[in-house]
Amino acid sequence: MIEAQIIPVRRCNLSCTYCNEFDSSSPPVPTEEILHRIDLLAALGTAVITISGGEPLLHPELDEIIRRIRGHGMLAGLITNGYLLTPERIERLNRAGLDHLQISVDNVLPDDVSKKSLKVVNKKLRSLAKYAEFDVNVNSVVGSSIRNSADALVISRRASDLGFSSTVGLIHNVSGRLEPLSEEQRSTYEQIQRLKTPFHTSALYNRFHENLARGLPNDWHCRAGSRYLYICEDGLVHYCSQQRGYPGIPLEKYTREHLKREYHTVKRCAPYCTISCVQRISMIDELREKPLEAITRFFPSKEHDDMPVAVRILTWLFLPTKQGGRRFFRSAALRLLGVR
Ligand code: SF4
Ligand code: SF4
Image (tube, rainbow, N blue to C red; front, side, top):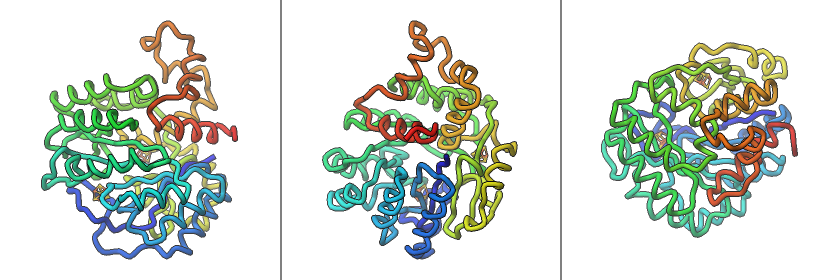
């Protein structure tokens, strides 16, 4: 089982200064080509495809892309800056069968670093709360590139007020590596963590991000290139958005042998990596291979001491929550564990 990210358009309508994942001019990938890539990913055994960019809402046939993903029985996710969302566009995403949308909000007021601002997208968030039939997660960030780290707390609270799940990312530099957090940034990060439900506090955000927030490395095996594939606009397979060029093989030529090889490849960037989607899927893999060790690591005894570990993990996977993100992650986890 594989999770993949595809890029149907590299162009973005914004130009955040910390971002190395966009340009301002490239045309959308032809729809037939993207649909073919989705078919190839389905044949490789992909369970979840997240559509990213650039800004994926700039692709004129995004709905068709989502429909093809859903047509293969895979889960469809979308990462957007939200600028192009309208009630009508949200209804179209509903009809296309989107499962999950992540909207990234960097600050409360726009500045020269980022215009992914609560002030600008607040109306979009209200529309999502009213019209979206898919799960919505609001992702805020803390890190050296963001001027006012306290904004992340305001954004997380707003997400929670609207009934959305929220995550906080630690922003990386151009090579995907975390710059050390200042005292103020660490304090904001910790306050946001205290807002979270057990889903977020007990699973991988704690394990990976709390170490990183303290400037400490993580000991984990990144399964990028095997359990996680990043397909760029040119149809090449890369480890992730921050390690483009490796292995850099056309998806058409990517075989089970490549998946097997990359499963075992040790990535030197892993100790300080901030790419949470790859960490998440690698966590699931660890759970498959070494269940007892993994459960002990992901659910340390200081949390929910009164609950047996098996109950904790089942709770994480199955209990309903007001926060919609759980439904998507639960479905994804079950598919990645091989349970349909
Ligand atoms: S909105 Fe997203 S893709 Fe566009 S420049 Fe900002 S971070 Fe990059
Ligand atoms: S550890 Fe894996 S996910 Fe993280 S930057 Fe390196 S290749 Fe990408």
